[in-house]
Image (cartoon, rainbow, N blue to C red):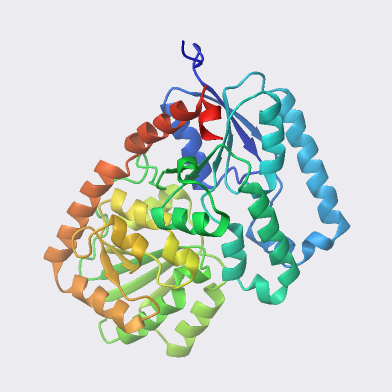
Length: 389
């Protein structure tokens, strides 16, 4: 006789996760798409990037910070008291601070704990050189993450190479790992006609948070190399740590072919993508850059746009160069400039990339496809947690 519940599976989506982060929003939407009842149990701890950066740089030593942490978890426990019965607890990203409490609460009810671990906060800290500015903090973050990795019944990770890193770093058994790519919200990010009237320009679009793994300075250097091609234009959307450096380089080189734009609302961003000729992914060489496939790559494929990205084992394991994506050497402005020029002068290559990239997306990364994959993950763990422990 099966231990599976007869009612629709109820998922407690638990933690101090970033509620507006695309991965969390999509996970909740996909769970609901599967027919599961999702009960968000959330308390806000972080106010934004600068807040997290300040805490990781030593702000955690301030008693005010710990007062805020205590208040957040008091609110979270208050929310949990209202959740009622559930069949599985999900931890959203980032869940490292929430795992111990989530394990305790789900364990009291005998329910499985699934963590959408996504990215390592240790790698992020090292990437942003916090190990140089505050080595004690990074050691504490590593201890927290290592302790957290021992608790869940199941981990959801987005790429095979990231899964291999976690296994090497924390000795996670194969049977506890399930792969679920980022995908995109193709209810919004979908093929649209280019509304731009000026067809003479070849627009290369970057959008993101200007973090080191994106390699934005490489894009600016490529723009300098291509300055003699006035038809090739660069638009950079967003804010983040490397934006000031990028703007300084653009001013220093007096580049007329580069425009910086602040954050756009999602609808405006989709319009901006539709206006572009090619999406620029990431070109840095940090561990994060090599292990992940960023949202913008999936969103570009979803909108049937050609995507140029830095080469890596992660990219090669998923997409074919010259067919579904165009890859170039990382940290190499000349290689990026040559890739852009190749697409700008060969419209048939752009058309192939757009068509085949979108076809790959529909077959492997679509909202419906990943919802079905997530449904299998949940069904595999509900009622059978002892198999995974």
